[in-house]
Image (cartoon, rainbow, N blue to C red):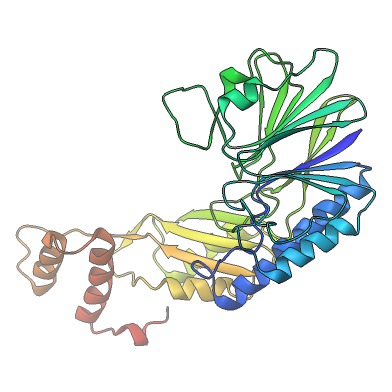
Length: 357
């Protein structure tokens, strides 16, 4: 049989802390569309079972709209079974809703065993204990899949609730360990050769969730797991070193080269680094204008440092200004760079609003 393994959708996330309200609203909608796309992929690939390894929602109290969308999507695929374990974010999210007939739910700190043809699924919600895993009777003549949400660890000293001891799995015939909690797709081998996979998030929400995002398609006949991309958009962290650049057009040229291969529908966070001559005026908003309209969303962080060359013998106003700013312990390094940039241009008779930047 074919099984789709997904996790950490975090539907109904609040994203206004890092995105403008308009963009955050659109992204919340796109997270729902990605869930639907993942289910459609399961149908297209002939999967009869969908495993949701926790954190389907970002909150235990999702909005009625998000909840209804998900349940309707599952109901519309009555030929597939959905097995959902609660994660650390969404425990109790369905407490006031009746799951569709084709949806099986395992609450946090609870466990259950399900049989599908020649496959047995051992499922436990977030907060599973070592004793619960030890009680899973994985038989040698069966294909055994464990569905868990947490962090695999070999340390018994770490007693955080999210920890799942690998030693509890060492002597069991686990053919596939379907995991949720880490948002990056990761695959590893267990001690007896079984495959363990974090599906990762199907859609990146922030710039700590960059690169390919998707779900896993598992064929239990071969125990082969293929990664399927589902994201509506890909997020990119791009670092551009502008050392040696003298003018803004030179910096723009390097930025253009760095983002040339990125699709317009994606999201970009640009980090400018390196050292430039002291006349450079730090105005990342000008680089932001270069990217606005080119991508769905772009953010720029100006980490450019000014190359200061004050000498002890420099008794000019310029030299004294540089020395005082650099020695001011009340200013952060970033503030020093900004004060120096504006101050030196002002000493040269140029105001920020007069600059071509």
